[in-house]
Image (cartoon, rainbow, N blue to C red; front, top):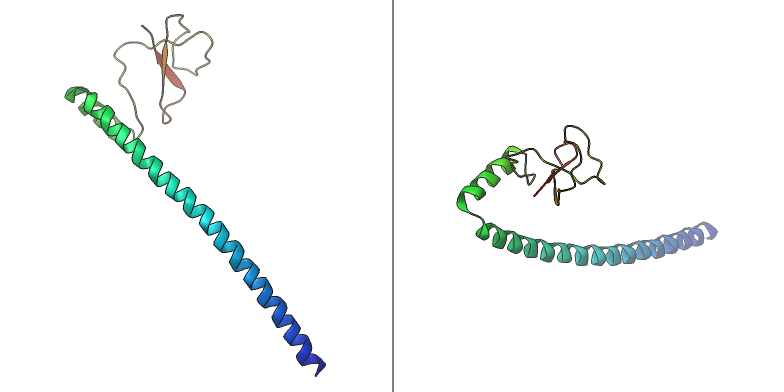
Length: 120
């Protein structure tokens, strides 16, 4: 009789633990679902913004951008038609040229080493 009572007590403990785990799982799932919904909404906003920006580009520039983007595996890039410059305060690895006090913008290409900047 004692063995049966011990097994019933153990069963009750395990069932309580299972309910606790299921509750925690449901709560975590709800948090993750809300995060997913936010990300899906943000992605839609960014896609809409990207489409608007693409409409503002000249067709030739857009073709060049799309070609370079495919070539770089999805990385947004820009073709530099002259040697880039960089602000004196920035530290960029080679092959980027020496600092320039006229540099005003930076384009970061994650697939490349470092950053390049465009002067005036």
